[in-house]
Length: 368
Image 1 (cartoon, one colour):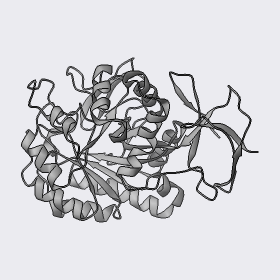
Image 2: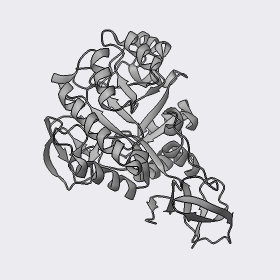
Image 3: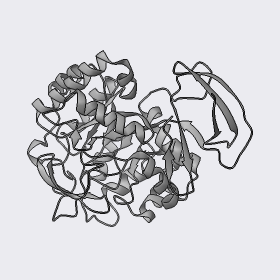
């Protein structure tokens, strides 16, 4: 039976037939105000974990990885970059090796997690910029260490977030870019000159711009303005309603334009868990009744308790963009940045789409 839905960008009613996981036909359908929408599945560049499971856990196993992937799929995230944050070399090696071994044996999981994101450990060790990343493991970049992780990952590390002010970072960025890795600036207290040098060296994006920096900054010359003004950088934003206020999101989108903004939920290991105090990432964390995840007693957030579908509604409301623009930020921009194919509703293509309801406030993916 065909799937009846409106194209998310054009509004055209379509009937889409799927056979054996591929699109068999796409034809016009009769319009109806009750039709859901259809779009490419979301691709989130930063999924750290959820439901108490995380990719940097020393106990990472197949069951945990499958739980994270299945939970993401329920929120319309058809694919994502498993994100491993600052940790010991041994823990990162184990995480990449465990992921790679499972994906080598499971083609469907490999399709849903085609590339990895390494966020740290080559980031600022200062309170504020490092966020909830454990200070003891922040360090200067080491190419040989990274190569060991890339080997363990089977070459799947596609994006690395670094702080430009760390010693040796410019040469490290150049080597990453030469090897085909996307370089992001994040968790940083870099000067304007260091940010500009990082872009010259090959950095092309900012990781969750507006977060992972000092809470108090100089009014004019600061790490946010420098990245925002640099046309060589696109930027991911955490639009979960907690990380950034509406005025900031609106200003960022106006400056970067919708064509250079990526939506990330930055789901943390505690996403989906009930309110309470937990120990994770080597520190005490708290899930508040609002869903906000914080380091208790500090102004610092520790990942997000939201998923990409809810971030889309916040983006529409906060920035005043259209639904189609927000969907593209969540489904298209990241794939383009990471040099991955963008799903289309084309006969013969993989049926990598989602069907969802939209009431002007909330995206609600349907389970097909």
